[in-house]
Length: 60
Image 1: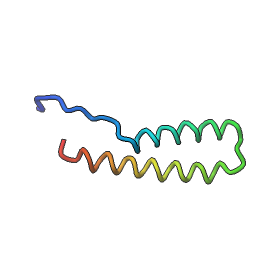
Image 2 (image 1 turned 45 degrees about the vertical axis):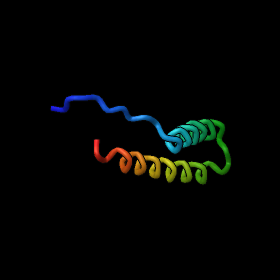
Image 3 (image 1 turned 90 degrees about the vertical axis):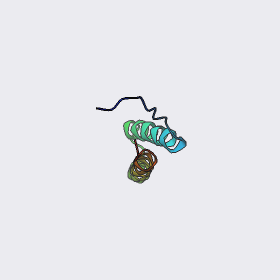
């Protein structure tokens, strides 16, 4: 059992990822013509953010 609290704060890449994810959903709803390109970029940023999060908090 773990005793003690650790705080996991959001980093700047995580905030950028959230912005891209929300923007991608809006562009999908608006039927943006180059949606696939934006979706792929958003996916790559999301993966990078997840890897950074795992790397930074690997000792928790």
